[in-house]
Each structure stands twice: as structure tokens, then as C-alpha cells.
Image (cartoon, one colour):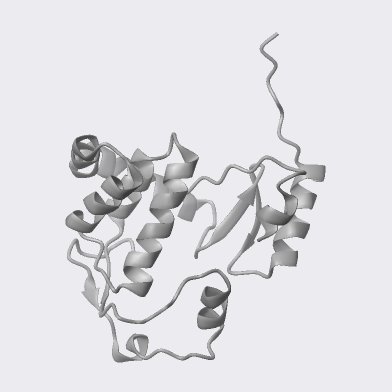
Length: 187
């Protein structure tokens, strides 16, 4: 919504970077404790999700290992539109459908977004790629990121967590004024 309100004023490019909430999660994930399985329609998470079209159903009974998801986002990083679509589908698969985000799901998402399935398959199982994704996630932790979402605008850390549209708009305006992006001229 904030982007829509400011689209005529700014050119937005959203980039997704890896961050592991549970960096030691086994590949198969882990069962969720009972407290994580009960939806609360009045919770801040439910309300924030409803505002942006995410239905937190609490269908998933496991915490996933998200390395493959991040490897898919890494594969799509050169096309911000596709990368954003991948992120949205990953959220839907986990938070709404209750999917475990395994390789089959990752490949189905890649195909739905129009990514080369063969290229994605090679990418997400490449030990070097997976280790690079893990290192990037560790770098964000080393920079002080301890939760998601975390928002950087024009290279500057702005805020964390779900926020109201006005907070985003104010942050976007401030980032444009205080931290303008340097454009490179080809002339």
C-alpha cells in the first residue's frame, strides 16, 4: 500500500536477503510446540496478515528448514519481480497452506513463477550455493538483525517488524531525503 501511494514519486526495488530464524534447524524441520498450533484471531500477527492478504492458518505442525527457500530466492535475485513473487508464494505455502517447504514445493513455486526448473534444481542442491546462502544469513545476524522482517532502505537500516502504512511512507520519504541513491551516468 505504501508503495502504491508513492509509486509516482519513487522507483522501488525490493530485494530479499537470507536470514535464518532457526539457523540450527535440521533439514527435515522440527515439530512445533502446542502453543504454536493454536490460532488467535485477535493476535497482532493475524491482524497484520489480514491487512496484507496473508491468512495465518496455523496448519503447519513443523518449523521448516528454510535453506532451500532462501536458495530459490537467491536463484531469482536478478529479477526482482520474480524474486518478490517467489517470496509471496513461499509465505502462502507455509503460513496459509501449512506446507513444509521441501524440494518438491520449492520446484513447483519456481515453475509457477517461470524460472528454469532444471537450473533451479541444480542451484538449490549445490552445496556451494547452500553454504553461500547460510553465510549471507550469518552476515545479517552479525550486523545485528535478530528477527524478520527487517527493512533497509537505500542501504540504511530503518525498522523491523510489521508496521502501519504511514510508518512505511514516512520511512521511504526519509530514506529518499537523507540517503539518496547515487545514480551512475553512462555518458
